[in-house]
Amino acid sequence: MSIFKRLRDLTLSNVYALIEKAEDPIKMTDQYIRDMAADLEDAEKAVASQIAIEKRFKQLYEEQDALVKKREEQAHIAAQNQNVDLARRALEEKKNAEAKRDEYKANYDQNKAAADNLRGKLEEMRKQLSDMKNKRETLVARYNAAKAQTEINKTMNGFSADSATAGLSRMEEKMLQMEARAEASNEMNSKGKSLDDEIDALGANKEVEDELAALMKQYENKS
Image (cartoon, rainbow, N blue to C red; front, top):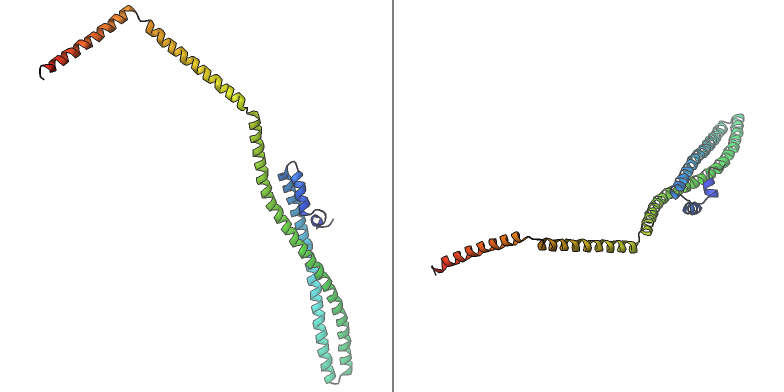
C-alpha cells in the first residue's frame, strides 16, 4: 500500500465533495483527518528512511573522492622519489577509488532525487491535512447553523398564526363577558339596598349639610 495513497486516489476536492454529501459531515471530516494524519506519519517515516539512504551514499561518495585525491598525491610523491612500483600501486588504487566514487555518486544523485521528491509530497500532505482541519472548522459552523435553522423551521411549521389569533379573540370575548357580569353585579348591589340603608344615608347627608351651614354662618358674622 502506497504511503501517499491519499494524494493518489483521493484529492482534497473529492474529499470535500464526499463530506458535503455525508449524513454527518463532522464525523466524516474527523475520520478523514484521522486517516490523513496516519498516512502522514507513515510518510514521514518513509521520507526519513530515504533521507538516511541519501546521506549514506553521500558519505561513501565523499570518502572515495577523498581517497582518490590522497592516492593521486601519493603517486606524485612516489614519482618524485623515482619509486616506480609505489607510484604504480598508488595509481592503481586511485583508479579503483575513482570507480567506486563514480558508482556512489550515481547512487547518491538517484537517492537524493527520490528523497527530494518525497519531501515535496510530504509537504503537500501536510498542507492538505492543514486545509482539512481548517475545512472542519467551517463545516462545524455551517452544520450547527443548519441544525439551528432546521429546529426553527420545525417550530415555525407547528405554529399557526390563525389559531393564535382565534385564541386571542376567545380570550377577549371571555374578558368582555367577565366585565359585563361585574357591571351587572354592581347594579344589582345598588338596587338591592334596603329602606333602612337609604334612610340612614339621608340622615348622614343631613348631618354634613347642617355642619356646613353652621360653619358658613360663623364666618358670615365676621365679614
